[in-house]
Length: 337
Image 1 (cartoon, rainbow, N blue to C red):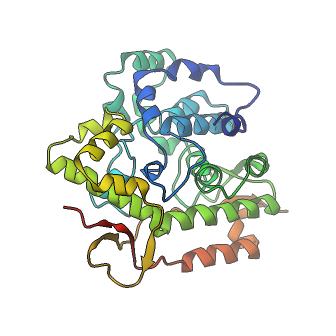
Image 2 (image 1 turned 135 degrees about the vertical axis):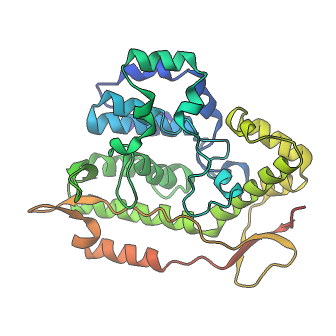
Image 3 (image 1 turned 30 degrees about the horizontal axis):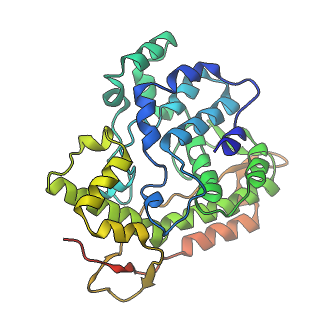
């Protein structure tokens, strides 16, 4: 983890972040994994455990690197404070497959009992309202397909930690080729200094976006969401538990009460098919597209990479054509009841 984090740490380290790292709010997300349940099955093999805390720390250092804005950097550190255990799996509990926004709680609700954190925010002159409207911080957060620090780490950690498609040096090379540009809305946005590096990033985006549209990730998230839903129905856990308990403790509860959880943990093969699996737990749905089309410097101006690079445009067209097989299932995992 440290080797990955060190790519994004500047020499002028933002020491004002340190006091926040062990607050109750930040400590909680040390036990919320980044990959939405994918760490709990052999269908994937992540390089190491990467949590919402790790992600938040990386994003904060990215924001500091590109802005040197104290408020935006602290907002970046706290941007996932409202994430529940299993993250976007909980959106699936509420049938929110497309927007994936129903599970996150407002920062004010999450930190209202964290007196230590509130005192630090007051000390740094940051109002809670500034943390709830992240649209005011475009380097941290903006709408797809624009690029921001949150989305940038999503692409990087997918390719390095989750899918093992890229090495650290490749991540660093792409990151070092980035700068802040002014986009078509006259707002600052992270972009690239040249097409060569931008095209390398587009290759990574394709891997990232395609995987999140693929059936393996969707299957895992749907299965975890169904187990959570059944746990609600049987009064094993409450919605509030997802914001207070550790994922590992919830997994122990699932293993004790659902025989299928052990099958899920040991599953290593997903079967894709266009024929309806009659007796197996299976998936068949469309989920949120997470595409990213970055800006790049040209000789005379700034443009989206797909408008100036034929190579990049072909990759984006291929992504738009991608359709996962209609159904997916694990042979050993039967319908839940």
